[in-house]
Length: 503
Image (cartoon, rainbow, N blue to C red; front, top):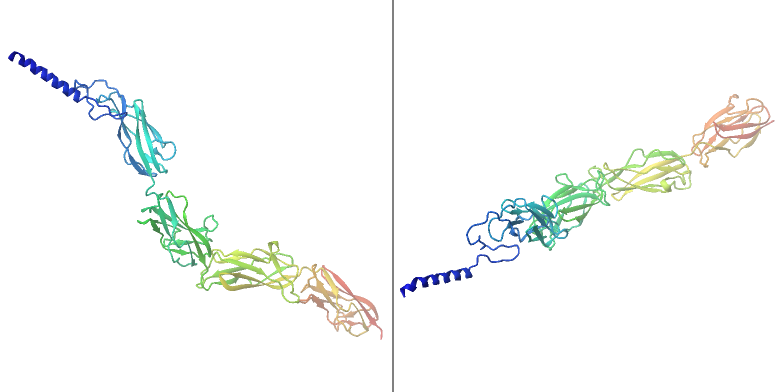
């Protein structure tokens, strides 16, 4: 029995070792791209001197989430490895390509600026992609790392939560204030993300004074400014996603304009319709001469000009002024006198500028001589500015004798009816202040315009009705017929046929 003891003990020991080996294999497979934590070197307990990689494994960066247009916090990392669990050799610079989707939810790498990038492994076989930034499209997607030894995938998500997706104006969306005064309500907006949740901490930019109809602002546009004097201000949304602008003041220009509020990542701004109203007790006053003159059918040399000021004397810009050219009233000499703007219109509008001044377009006298009135009005005030205009007659083109173009009297006596003429222009208007010369013969039957026999010629100016009336004319002592001429210098002439009768 003793002779068999040692032999039996060796058999039992070998059986135990076989059981251990069978129950605890040195390598357990865990699937493509992933090496087991229990991987160990070969059973001899040593690693080979040359140990090239035969697989690519994940090291970190999955899964993770980033907000739109922001960088992912953890780097995307892989490693080249050998399934024997030993450190790999000869791997420095081995290329690994990281690729994200070319469209839709994706992102870009810092160094390439594109959705793909290739990096080289370090001496230990590790490869880390540059910083990866989500694009502006929300959604989940897969980023892949590929090498000659396989590929692995990362699960990434671009989240729109907390990113502004909409901005809306809160009431009042429309309000008004008198020029140079404060608007009653500040501008307020609500910022929401794509899920309809309020976004806190978003910076909202408010801009005042975009003139209605677009094109931006000018010095003469209706607008407003914040307390800083600027047309722009910023505010940050609170926990409810609401941002409110500072208070603001209307400028001196009357009119409508738009204020806007913008926030990053949202293309369509929120807008507010604002209006600067005329100040209380505004007054429209005439500038320049109250009386303007022009020749018929000629352009007036001056425009109609007015200034609009508020109760404190400050100019009000942006008000629409209507200029109206009237016509002479009644049946007198001025009846029908008038003028017109371009195109024959009797009215025109202009807008008060930075200094509250508005000037009419040019205008042209009509064909009728005489005096008439022009007015300037605006809805900003009930006051009216008035102008007196006069169309002067043109140059004399015709002269006609009065009721006595033929007349007789005894020698040495005065003609009963005085010699008179009417001077008119080419349009039939009576020409005032025209110089008319009356001339009688210097010898023979004739007469004189005074007690002195030598006064055979006299100059007389036409009155406002275009009539020139000669002084009384007395026949001389010689009987016979003759002609007295009435003429305008370098202009028309007419004649009177007179007879000195013998006693």
